[in-house]
Length: 394
Image (cartoon, rainbow, N blue to C red; front, side, top):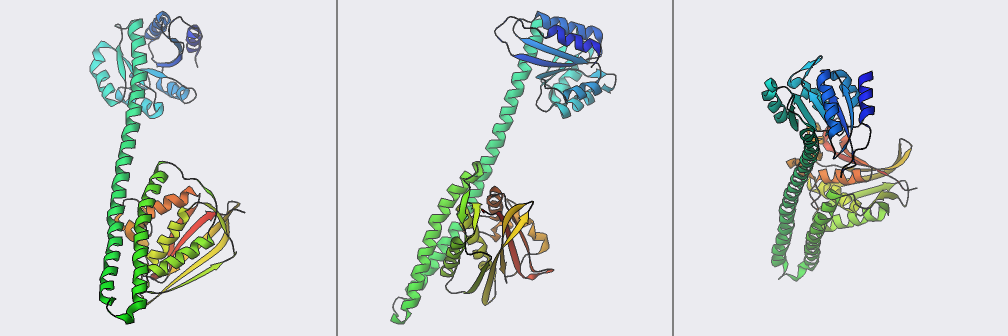
């Protein structure tokens, strides 16, 4: 900082009478000593605020001090020794973030000042036509206008997020509820076919169970959408939860949901009880991974292997869960795409209305990871291996 700028800061670092006692830190970037002195004197006249003024006569030093100190407003001359015109404003905007900028301009540069306001400055002042009241009004106006613009941008972002959430849930309900109702319809049609034949009592019983499961899926879908909306808005409560009994429940539910399928599931674990830092959504993840291992499998015998092992990651104890199937697999080009929100291939996992993008969000809320590999490296047609890494509770 040069001697003159230090002096002007000390001159103005005194309280002034008035309703507002908040300190306003002002950075002035101006190379004309006469204009600098004028701004200093005008600030002394202001009775409704308390200003700390710091100035530099070139853009380079101004940007350096901007990165070192906090300022409430910047007063900027667009014509500086090391920068000229709107380029000056562009450079300040890159570093200023949410700090409002007031352009200080001559009468012959008024058009450029207006262009600067259109480009992101909050206000402009014309040299030779500025008084203390006008300067103070411009400073407070610019600060408040910047706050309002920030709030509007935040509100617009929130509105867009809410709109996308609503559209996403609508798609979930439309797609998955249709599948559930289709399952119930198919079950009732088969019931009509088997009803009159007493030899079909076992089939009738299985169909009845299947319809009940589909109804329960519908209830659970609606519940999950409600819970997922909570997850979208804030993190759900994470706690210690034992997963092997949940995995066994998912296994039983899978076979009940697909009684006509020949499904073989092998679960191997390094412990008889495993506790994770998670919550009840882990059950939904298991359901989805298992259901889609069946849905995307054309083999007469569907084989799913669930391998559970321990792994260290950056000194953290993690549990590794691998869901390995003999289905049709996923090409390399789709491996990343299926995890992207809004991608229509999100339907790859749709069992309970939880797309893979939301599965990722849930896993990440546990400080975990999820990805997919080939069952046989280099040959995706042999099946997929969905891998979860989630912190373990010791």
